[in-house]
Length: 102
Image (cartoon, rainbow, N blue to C red; front, top):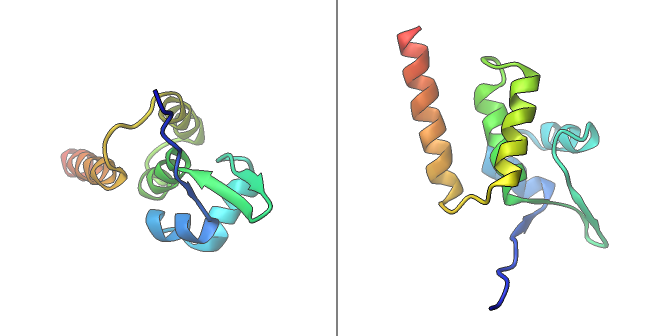
């Protein structure tokens, strides 16, 4: 059985996908909030890291850093089998719903 290659993203691509600034993505890498692979081409992020950055943007003001770290560990440990955009839409719906109930 052939192993599926993981798609990797540059910090600039991760910034666009997560809707964060490039500076915020680089800060997350520098502070080791997300893990970047070092290659000859530079630092690269995998899909769970991009999902985490997107969640960081959406949940940053509503959750503790410890909660976000645990959430990222869960994301990294479990492969996401559906599209990142669909996951981000679900997070946005649930946070919007939670905010309207609060």
